[in-house]
Image 1 (cartoon, rainbow, N blue to C red):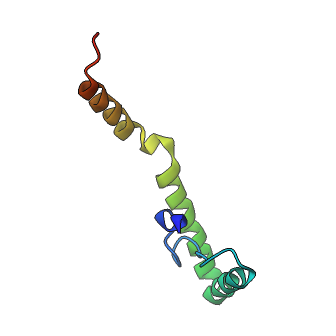
Image 2: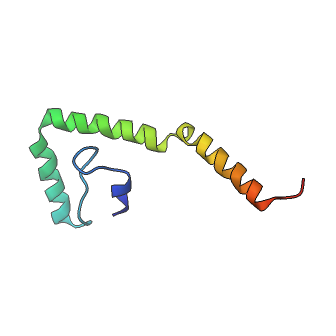
Image 3: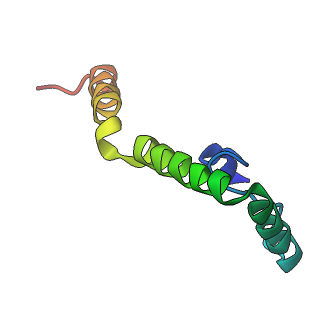
Length: 78
């Protein structure tokens, strides 16, 4: 699933096999089995992941370099 690109199963969240009620129930059982402390730690890890993966400020320089490199490749007249 595409979510596995953003979430490490069991560390930053619980990934489901599909969208079925059975899969959802299985995920809830896994979450409950972790216990409160591990659940909170997963929430902290998820927040850190979201801040690093989706904060636009973390991507400004790589995007800027990409655009400048593309501009050089295209070689538009000034």
